[in-house]
Length: 380
Ligand SMILES: Nc1ncnc2c1ncn2[C@@H]1O[C@H](COP(=O)(O)OP(=O)(O)OP(=O)(O)O)[C@@H](O)[C@H]1O
Ligand SMILES: [Mg+2]
Image 1 (cartoon, protein in one colour):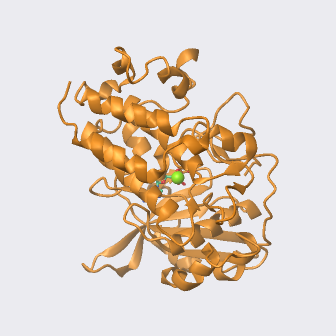
Image 2 (cartoon, rainbow, N blue to C red):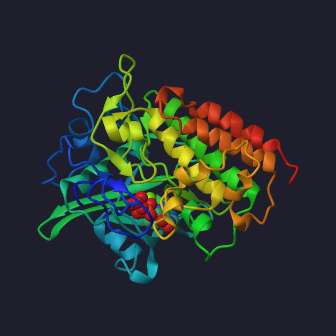
């Protein structure tokens, strides 16, 4: 993968820099990338390399040492088993493709509690680089530790370094209803109702609260966006893609200094400028998704008139208290939403999108406001 990992819209190539004209919703990584990569020349089990690649001096609680306690629940697959499960990575079973790899539907021989073959999603990393390995490793470590109803479940992983090349795969529980991105922006799906939009965004916010506050260590997701919100059979949201996640700062620090990675159109400007990462970087991205949810528009859309290409600039002309606020609302909602609630959500988005990260609300506060907005039912 190129050395800039900012992510952009669905299926285009990674961008080289945030400042470049063509935006990309694919992963980016700043040219000033400085994080140390670990050596992946041998077959690597996550528990052997975690301390090297995630942090060099683990604090008392760290993802690596939590992984040692909790990561055992993950299954280690051999490559042949995953090849068989996906019918040799058959294109007919392809679920999608992201910046880091291709995802296939797979059927494992083992049966679930109902005696059915276990359906999974198998992500095969296309990067044979150290960077690819690093992202794979982060995903194994973080998902090996976390457990929450709004986070995707990792079933296991596969790592083989052989003469024919290195293979890194991840096996997740299968999510039958695609992603929030698909339902918001693709005409192939019926429009999402107002209530469902709020239900999805509330669950996603609860996933972030758990990451930010629910564990012994703080986790910064760093890649919150509509395509990383998977939907289960009841449209319950599950955050996915922990390849860019980072441990938050320890008590004595205010931020982690890191190379800038994330997705164009979603990453916080203060983080892009300084490389200082905090949980408030996720709050900014959350604000962007709130506006996507209200408007049915992507944060960056190059095929619109210039003044409308950047969603955050465009919505500024229609603030929540303005009489013409409803101009921004997704026409696919067909006016079937409570205007008062929509204004509340826009106000909340604006709070998430303030310049100074310290002034942004925490995710617990965001959840509180969302729940309040969900109580407003009168349409108009
Ligand atoms: N657990 C899963 N169950 C079902 N489908 C999945 C699962 N994980 C991923 N997918 C599908 O695979 C697609 C590609 O996912 P992936 O995370 O690799 O890329 P992305 O999120 O679209 O882009 P990016 O790499 O920028 O994050 C998703 O859009 C989704 O449709
Ligand atoms: Mg993704």
